[in-house]
Image (cartoon, rainbow, N blue to C red; front, side, top):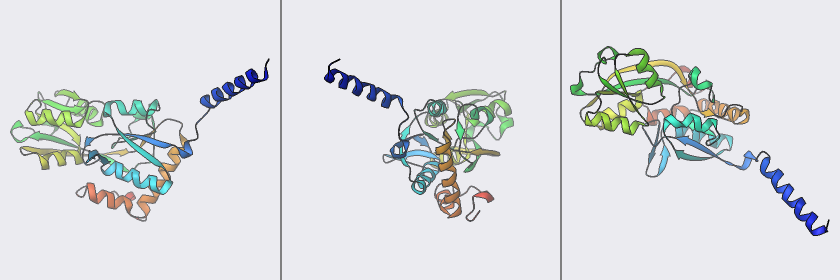
Length: 256
């Protein structure tokens, strides 16, 4: 075989082996799947992704030397996109349920799930017992979706791909009420005349950043970063900025 041809074949084989091998993640930017419309947890403002979850993740990344790129998606698709590697991290107040743990891995908890039933003042919605027969909006695949099915089975669930679509339906009267994260429901009621939070529901379900199952290196870094931002008071500062009326669990107070 001519020497030139042999050299070319060797080069091609080397390229193929490199392409099939594991990439060097130490210098890679991690793509973060998040939401653009879910205040105050995860949203986009003036072209920048912000909110409690995203700002906390930015602080964690700074302490752990991670580079992030935030990308908007619908919550209904997010966990699947983390599982298939489209995103390295999912950031959007994701409740760590047993069902979700079958699809993705999670960081240690950094907050807890609370829900709010938002409704128009004239809709006659007061609590879960008043939802029977009413059209109630939820974002598909969320804890709100599961909560409605379990606690108000006689309600007519109307499922949406994201918070913005559910809010629009609520404002126009296409639904009588909607179940959001508590902080999101409070923000919508504050900024939209005629809306109220009829009831808040506190749960013990922890929030976590979603990662691909088996990505122990990234999970360890996230967990280490969470400990650091709690200990130095960063967690509390971010919380007070975005969720000032929500109680602070003891384990997230500085020095814990």
